[in-house]
Image (cartoon, rainbow, N blue to C red):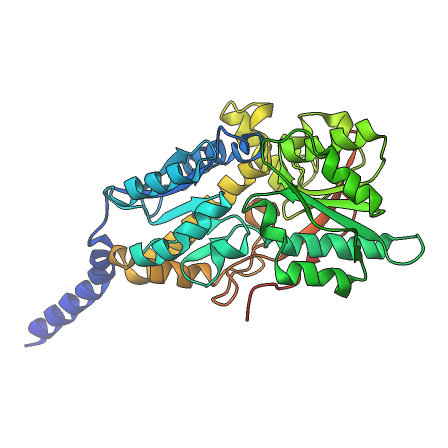
Length: 400
């Protein structure tokens, strides 16, 4: 009888020890797919193109150095639209029919993020996108890898007011692309913030085409309105067209450009000297920052070139790190069968004041605000993008 009792105890203990392992192993996939759709070769490519090598290098690191997700390799599927939104939709349809279906599909194209927002909910996929209101709201399965573009502008307006030494209110004119990305700053909240910040808008909002290289007409309008600064939500050739126009007119007006990243700066460093930038990332020129040191090591290890050094290399790594973290947490809690959009979102929403790789940015996600809020002002000095203010918490422009 005593032997039978001890045998029973040993069997129960064995089951307790075996069951969690068995549960986690059940449904274990051979591989996991994640995806990103972006303009890696078109008008946005000087900045956005580095998203692709960043994602490749990040997942190589997580697979080889960290063992993948509980031993399962994560395969990044990267699709280049060349800037064509319709092609991006076709690529999305191709991706969701793959086996296994990607757990995440990210995009840097604002119109594509807007189009995919309801589709991601319908298809049970999570996406981390660029910070445009239309790509995230109404809330669903969409997150942003940095604050809303109109929130960047708000931080810049606060800085302009804080540092203004002239008489009366400073006057800021807007000259931006006539695209979803360019117009993402022209929200009710964004435009209303001028008054709240104590900044006057100079004249009417001016827009230009993504491939336009001559913006003289728009600049003349802003000069007539006596703009003290110009704000633009453009990148790559956009800020360059504005700076060239200003120089040709002999108008020494400061440009504040959210898209003036290192990829843009490299197009013509002298043209951007002294210009201003609100950005949610560290700069490649902050050599003492641990995350910059780590990124430079990874670029060297993967034979990356100067051409691939832009903020979107950080984006590729940040998205991969957030996804890696969420997937591991879900598998630990629910096993492999728990890898679904609901559980992945729940884990993303636990991220608070997270600084990946030692501080490339700061991320907090919640169910009501799946968007970070950190922005800092930078300036081009001696051909380098350097900080000129402390990190700021951007105002919340998401609808309540």
